[in-house]
Image (cartoon, rainbow, N blue to C red; front, side, top):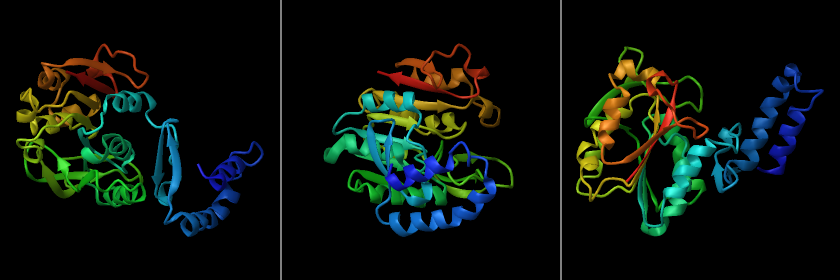
Length: 271
């Protein structure tokens, strides 16, 4: 983190000034102007979980350096030089950049993000970190079919996407993993799609069934609370990984006994 940011945050959270909201509301426009003036081109440095130096756009200044540390560790320990990886639900690109740096010039990371605001930030993140050669950006949702899908974006600026079936959403492009990786291998698969995990897996059924092409490691964020809308359940999702050694863990890396009662957790599959 840049000293300017570090000093600003230290002052902001000073014991005597922490609750002076009137003061921070007055200062914030000047602070944002300074960020834009001095860091628009260079980006802001984050050492994610103490291991990965990632440059982020100045508009993401609120982003902490502690980011899903357990999950990050599992994924980064599994990626290899020359791997082909898919980041489904790439958001602003933290995982994408870290994966791209590890696969190197002989590897490739496919980053899928359907929300146009997130996708624009994702493009900036990739540009700032100079990994464009290793990353293929795809402005699309990943689903069980190719075409269009209805979804709505969370109102928070850096939130993930929430798929929906109501009239509040809008149409975006969607693609199948089987289409993108037809006759191609995929080594690492990371999925974070807010409850529509099974839709992604359905669209990659052929890939996952092929021992020569399917990923040796999959990391999937599960959202059981959202499954009633999509019709998914833990058994139907696990069926896609019947040949894998699977573990379902909470954010602290502890086994989850009943997935359907958990608010959310991560599934780790190795082969």
